[in-house]
Amino acid sequence: MAILAYGLNFRTASLALREQIAITEEGLGEALSRLRSDIGNVREAAILSTCNRTELYCATDPGNAANVADWLSDYRSVERGELHGAAYVHWDQDAARHVMRVAAGLDSQVLGEPQILGQVKTAYDVARAAGALGPELDLLSQHTLNIAKRVRSDTAIGQNPVSVAYAAVTLARQIFADLEDASALIIGAGETAELLARHLREQGISGMAIANRTLTNAENLARTFGADAMQLGDVAENLHHYDIVISSTGSPLPVLGKGAVEGALKRRRYKPVFMVDIAMPRDIEPEVGELRDVYLYSIDDLTSIVEENARKRQSAADSAELLVTEGATTYTRERRVQAAGDMVMRYRQQASATADSELDKARKAIARGEPADVVLEQLTRALTNKFTHSPTVAIRKASADDNADLLHYIGDIFDLDR
Image (cartoon, rainbow, N blue to C red; front, side, top):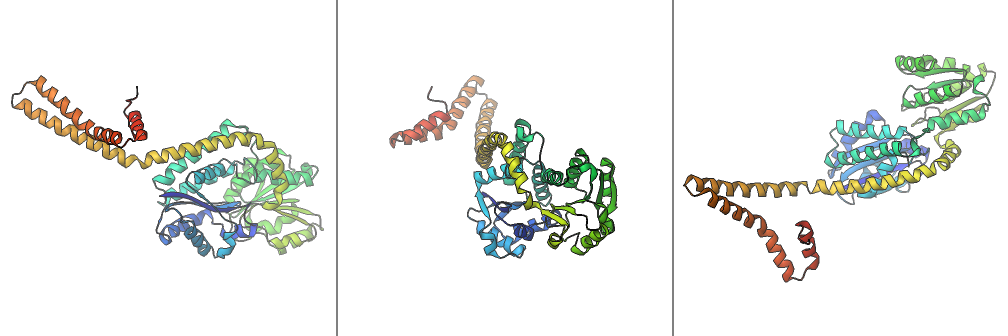
């Protein structure tokens, strides 16, 4: 059994391709079930799908990446050739190192962004709830989350965390000299929306509203930041009030179309609007970017801010990489120990059975009236002979074969070289 990490991310795949293969959190359970049923030798699986990546982690037979790629191609109706040039494959310790780098934010578009750790944890939790997580991936999940937390606590990369949400607000601040004169609409009420609201409030935004399909969720978030709340269906009617619109929902379809934005522009008398779409799939129709008075940015447009952030954090990232390498090595060692568990159990059972058998003989001898000290001496000798028989045979054979390496190894095991 081998560990496979197969996926595509923002470095290897276009935004359009990432949209095609993205799987919503609600759809992960079904996808995991299909993956394991469609490919019989995928024993365990977990799927991480975010705006920047979709990755499949599998406990499967070595060399099974092609089958996993074919499955993803069929499941998401994407041409196999499109995946071929954009996908990456990692096995065993390299797979563990990759997953740990992802969870630690070292493979993120914004280096060190904190949300990915929660997303990785959710991916494992969903897999566990779906019955797709067995001993192999469960061990990987424990080591992955442990290393990611250590990176956060032991390196500077965890200080002043920067996210895609922060990058979006930074871009808005560059366009609007003073956010105190601007108003913002956040579409969505999840974790990213909360980060957006926090960053905007810290930058002194004049007015802010939260829109969400479920009004209660919007109201709860709005209450935290002193913002207004509205349902998603009311966005088009109120859109003209806002200078900044940042959208981050989990909707499979766009929530804001070109027509609605055109109507808002007319009511604003064509006063420009700054829009950022950080959802996957996209929340705002790409055609909105064609409008003259709209400045629409996608996730991939945040590159310059991301690169600047990466330069500032590179020193911390170097320390984090050392922790990840250490974690991957420790995981591999523990995995080998786990794999040896059955052998250890059989060895202990064999030893216990031998001891029980000899002890039974000793009890019967005492019951027949044989002296206890004689019986104990016979018991000790019998156990010694039984337990040393196999090592003795191995030592004699290694000596006869002039196998110095094996002799040294046996000496280490039984502490015979001292």
